[in-house]
Length: 435
Image (cartoon, rainbow, N blue to C red; front, side, top):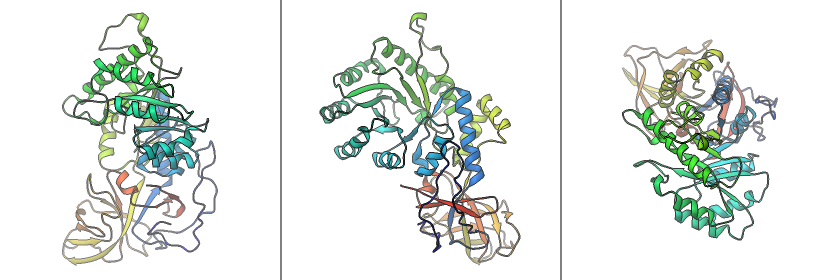
């Protein structure tokens, strides 16, 4: 049970989704009302209408951009949200660690990209039973000869196939093979092991920063497409459907456009070799939850760059919207201009900006009001935060505040259960997280 949300009648079956519909199943609703003080605060909640809106928005984008969608599940680590995304039309899910992969598999997710290297004996032991399931479609990244050799030796007698995506990186970035001029050493090592299959190419462009970042990302992807052509000519891929996958939550529009452009712009190849026949897969992770900070800034840039994103915004009732909030009580107003809120580092992300007060509610009133714009969190501690207010503002202990946050990953990972609420702030369901 959520460490904050207390109710003796809680039904441990949790939240499920209608298969294929993308709608919440008609389980008995909890009915607890946040404004009626029927739950313990602080509490993290997701607005039901917003998560469905965001799911539909990004699915529409991927379909119209002609790319597949494998959202990064590390943001929520909530299998019920994974099912919502898959039921909305996603090709698969991406995850960051083997424990996350095992958990998703145990909840019925059967196509997974491990957007990371598969490292370590125990992790391979955990993965092995999953690979023995013929219905399980699994991919992982590799970027070193040493890792390929280790995987080749480990799986040599296991009678399973491990599908690998060669990860391409950039200088000063994260993982990924750096020098494309000698990548054949890596590819040839993969070919030495029958249990290993080269299934495509992967990358993460989010580590490319600075002036002209867009142009740098375009050139980076063009080089990857050139690499694909070369490897395809050499028959290096082991299966008919080859994937190229990239894109976090900031540059998915640029990646989608470049991966679906069927001509190379930075290299000159003969018409005979220009067969860009691969499945493009993008992996944005934060769109379902979104925020009012760094990902809203990133989405604003997407809207400025992408006519397709603008069209989807106009046709789908708006842009991506922040669905996650945290409610908390005012604990004290110990001096003029300062309110102490019962919300701290244990409850909300603080690495990319402090929580932002959005709504103010006094129990007994009809509905919340927008918080004054000058209210601002200035400091956060383990269980409290300090909020600047006006010297004569009407705020007192027992009032309730609703906060938005920046960087949803680091808010969600603090909660074992997340409440789903309707427009009237009633808890309709709870979903479990598995961080």
